[in-house]
Image (cartoon, rainbow, N blue to C red; front, side, top):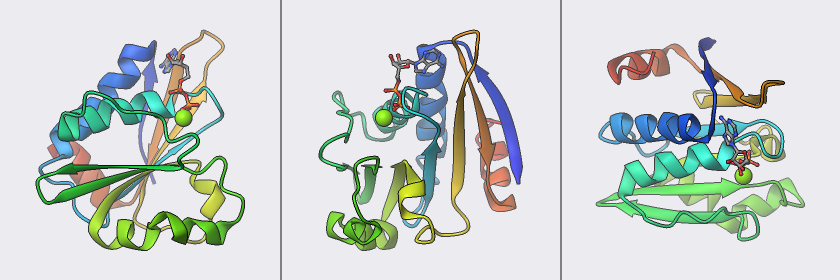
Length: 157
Ligand SMILES: Nc1ncnc2c1ncn2[C@@H]1O[C@H](COP(=O)(O)OP(=O)(O)O)[C@@H](O)[C@H]1O
Ligand SMILES: [Mg+2]
């Protein structure tokens, strides 16, 4: 279900959207939450993830998991797993990255979730980034009704 469509004119706007999600949802983010970041290379997925992760746990450095495929963060008892699956060769390789633990005990932020089609929970939140001719980005937010309530409560939509 389409929950929102937001224009992000520049990198700061993408960082801010992530930060709003991280800061306002962080207290309510729950183990098992999956947020997918979709769109082509250069669409701003990592930029948004950085904003979210910094707001979530105050991390000062948020490296892109381009080559490591996953980076993990902790805030108290809550763990956040940031995946970039662009270079995942086989779907089954995701289990070696700790995906089972991530789904069971953590919050998952996943770039290139199409690499593991079929392994994702149906109640995930999807942020789909589109590069605009103007140079900015449009992000379409899709998810089940439960996420609408959470985003509304957080004042994001
Ligand atoms: N909303 C935006 N408008 C314009 N440029 C952006 C926006 N979001 C990100 N960028 C820029 O796009 C480039 C790629 O961003 P990145 O987050 O690494 O993309 P991805 O992870 O989707 O490959 C960076 O130079 C970043 O500054
Ligand atoms: Mg990226």
